[in-house]
Image (cartoon, rainbow, N blue to C red; front, side, top):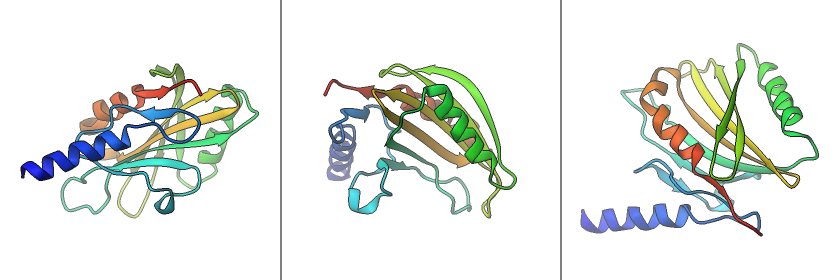
Length: 165
């Protein structure tokens, strides 16, 4: 048990390090969530993903990921483009929630609710733009689990840190 605890602390520490040249990181991921930061296992724009434990018998597991992409859009236009994209999916509702303070700076929050085979899914996205690069933290969970996970989700989003190149 002790070695397992040490391993988990080391994994969390490694995942909290910065990725790539952007110097972006999440410094407070949810405790006990599995971290995957191997580029071979992740979609192209995703830098890291944290996977939690689902509740009950439902196989859907909550996750938080950090993705980046180059953009020439303003934050407002980037958010509107994301909102339009989400709303183009059948049964999806997307709401702009306002700004949230992260360690990197002010980020725009979106809440996306979408039906799925596992039940209603809630996404919370925080979008932060800096020098032509978009940094997007996306948290996903069953809508029914959101109230139990929201404090971890927002703490993780607020820990988004950008360090000088």
